[in-house]
Image (cartoon, rainbow, N blue to C red):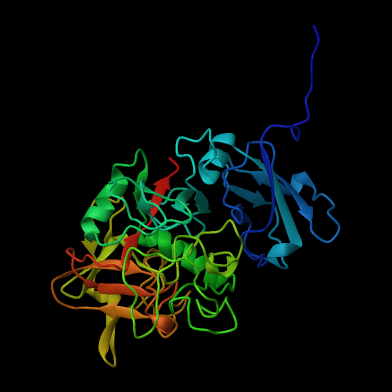
Length: 390
């Protein structure tokens, strides 16, 4: 009997090489993959190298987890995130889904696998996020179309002028695991960008303000016909236009790379599930993501900042920080002056994130709108698909 031994680094999938997803701080031993977001590693293929000389790190000093997302060091490393290279082969089904290849069940759609690095409840080990704000399946560059199926495709007008609840519901019809991006998923991405010191830019000034730096939040280039979303009128006093999905520079993506998640800052407000205000009290999803429960009054304090009163979470527990409400204590505190914050303390108010092309400095990955009711339907309010991996 002939025994054929094959090298596990032969043609078994798409190879990825990326830096560590988190900064080595000398205390953390558990790390996820994730800069590229193309999918989980094939078991047995993850290897670590020193970036300085591409020399392999002793495989006895780290080990894979079966989830295909996380791995563990036996001793916590120190240094910088790009001191170590993480190399692995991606599961073919993940790669097909992330890139929208012809053999994917969702061709031409692109998704990013983002690790649940802060152990946010109900997010599993990781979750898929649409690289682009949702558009209708039959959208063209100049028409929203009429399909009720959302897709994540580049170069399309965002699906707007639809009620928040209808946008959220349309995601559930997409298939198993699909849903409108949840607040704690959005916040997981935003917290990572803050943790890594990445400034997320976006179209917040209509992308047509005659500036010189195209990275500076949408200022600095003439908008070409191919990039302009013509499905809604411009705001004439500021010459502001939405952009077609994903058409900005790399700085408009969450990791500053061409394959990152696009347009989390500006362009259109995005409907987010799992957070709302009821008469000024924040409600968040329970552990099953089926019911919204009120935060205890003891967890909330207020501060009046002209012209509004802002609710703050007054402790730094992970569960509450992972919801991305302003925090005024130790931990990864949210800087409410960095991006806009809108709320209304009467009736039920649903959640939007990111801001739109007219919000200027009030837009950004941390921008939070809790001032609209469920009937809101505007040219500037879209949404984004997400999908559970389990």
